[in-house]
Image (cartoon, rainbow over all chains, first blue to last red; front, side, top):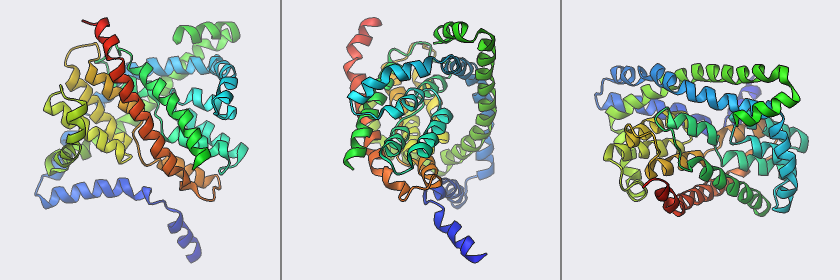
Length: 180
Length: 182
């Protein structure tokens, strides 16, 4: 019993404490400063449903497009097309599909990341590069759709710029993994 | 993208096309319901933060940065941007989202065309400015890595460089955007 429990305590990463500690600290500071914590919480939380409602159509449109892009095999074809280019600029060609999917789907790229771990080992070069690529980037299309939240109809290049920067970051991620 | 996907789908698997589109929409439904829960928690916590002074503290911490990058925006927009960036840095992406939506709404008003500030803000967020890749470290640990957190340093550097490139591109393409919209 005891060694097991100790092992568990050891493997809990420090980062696991960040969120709950942050929330608890906020309540504590509120209580110390005599803020009506419960009322303040309710006031904030009551906007949740409206926010989700407002974003839903944009989210639906983006996810339909992304699903079609993947299910139709276009994503894979794009990946195989890009793979020699990637090899040339020093990106492991094993990661092409992951790199194509990354800006479209968060859960999809985490799935592909686990696949890379399984195939090449979690400490291999492709696995480390993949970790850094996923960790240093975002689901570009999702962020644009959600943050635009129905207010923004024309993005004026914001999505394109984010994609270009993300790709540059991908190349740099691979370079860093070879150096560090 | 929808047209491309549908076109390719008609060639490869016409019977599955509508099904695939529906499964995408279904994902949006599940995600939205999940997001209601996430928003409820974080908007609640943010409500507390607005009253206990933590929000003001974050705004002040990021003021040197936001004053330079978002010169033209209102104080309220800048405060929201600061809090969004703070949440991103702390790795609380779920708290960053409602703040970001509010910030965009504040900057845009009723204008449907993204302003320069909005473009920069969207790029910053879409480049991902998070510094604690907690999920990935946990995944690596589960996959049996000997030192799961050795990706931390390269990830932080890559994140910073990506964000810098994004900001630089925003400034470089400003002239083109201006010409599009006098």
